[in-house]
Image (cartoon, rainbow, N blue to C red; front, side, top):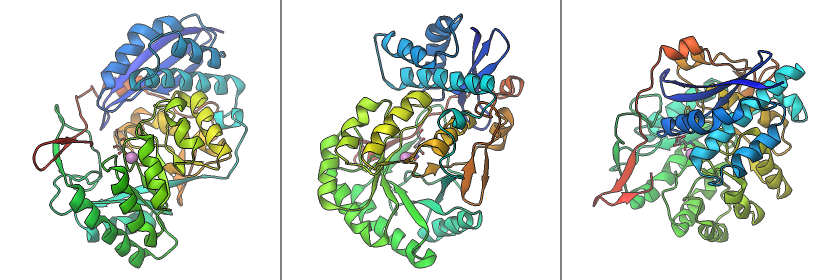
Length: 401
Ligand code: EZ4
Ligand code: CO
């Protein structure tokens, strides 16, 4: 069996996605997610120009060898563009292997370790009251875990808050300029979770994404202030390259910490894991080297009783979500899966077998990943440039977004 064709699909059904489709000489297809939000065409070109030609003629069953070939063989290893491209190839090869075996990918990973994948939904609002009404909607939809983001008074364009309803941060031909004030944020956010606990009681899992905005001591203060409200996690308190700052947070608070959505390999989260500086690893199939590499990260985490919390925003395509769900169902140390629904046009371009019901997701039982890209439908939605915002302090200084 040989890889006979490798095609890159760039499409914008409600938002931009990049997909890789591999076809074998006997007609088996496999798909992988290659979406890197705001830098989509860089990955598309990396695949088209430098990866697809190397795949032709290779044995699709040699997943591990192909991974090493693309990682070590490029000499310039790692980085989000390279790793997203490798992720797409790896995921597509698992899809092919599953189809050839006649088994869903989770069966190849050891089989189901649970009956369903606990998902968390997003709730947001311009005010606390609005956000809590959104939480109530998610709870009515069955979710047992909800992330809450509220616009901080006086902070225009707070992270995680939509322009009326659905939250989708990437838009426009240039990054939107938003503002940031750590002082206002820190004094406001605990009141949101106090109100959420009052309204929803002790059982609902509450999550919050700081989105890399704080210093170690600021994050320690926030973690302490949130302790009475028993958060499931405080996400990305600061950029993950700063391991020392996580040590500082740990000295001060028992609020659980999740990080890793921008981490692209095991090397960048090794110390966070082995020093038990985080409680949940948020690396994703789409950006951390596909199913093969994600399992290595999650296995390392399991040695330290650290659980998974894979990134699952709307900028991971339905292909990325399907792949995540197979891993989630099989690994021993699953924690939770982010679940942000896709636009309806995206569900049309990427027909899928995974399903959501009553707070839980399941990848379905079709051979492979159980997801495809309809290339004719994809062609009806041409790429439109869309950038993630930037954040500035009130004096104009560029801050972490
Ligand atoms: O801002 O995926 O937890 N989810 C997140 C996301 C990220 C986007 C960036 O592409 O932090 O909303
Ligand atoms: Co996040």
